[in-house]
Length: 340
Image (cartoon, rainbow, N blue to C red; front, top):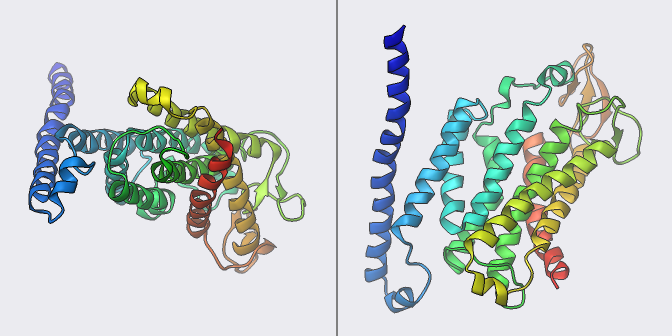
């Protein structure tokens, strides 16, 4: 027994060592490639003065931090193997561009994972696609984080890497892209909180967003007052983490000269609420919902299935992806009006 306990302790102590042994050479390899590219690029003078010279510490953080969260996600069964691989790539891209973007991703990933496991026994009763632990595969990771990753790559190519305050007057491009990333991830978090928490809090059935008729729990397009409030809170949560990352990573002198940063939190809340509403409208109209003989909501017609709403055009993944794309483009425009 004592030997088994010692083996477990030694394996836990060995994990950080193995992690460092993997992360350090990988990050150094990226840094060396970056330096070589700087010297051999035809526009090398631009890179000497510019922002594409990435420090080895940034490369190291971009490998280590996402890897730690992926290990946590696998341990908590929030991700499967395919979701972990794509999640690692998504985390790498967002961390490389800005720690504020990483903060948005981590706020979404951790809080949505906790929300998915909230009152699982109750969700099992009405959800035919219920998964124990709510493991996300690569498709779900792609639909939730794909748009944010694309905007982060544009941020890297156009702005570079590093933390910048949001200021649409003095730094329009980086502000637009950062708020777009916030919009995509806050939308995902607001919708996840609404579907995972709003459906199991309270006793009344939701109503369909298109005609306000009462529908069974789990129906695509079904909303409730509690669900809308929770979606707002989910977006505010991501916005708060983005705000804190900017406040604690950007130089204080730069912050004093920039516009106020508190609208970041408000923008996150707007994205969470509007994203959840957009997701519900798409789900109620373009996604099939029916109820089978066992009283569970299904997304495909079949024998003994009674139609509730929607047409079989999109599935849940497509609806999530479309919602993030819409909010990623809408929120920068809203933010431009919101900032003083």
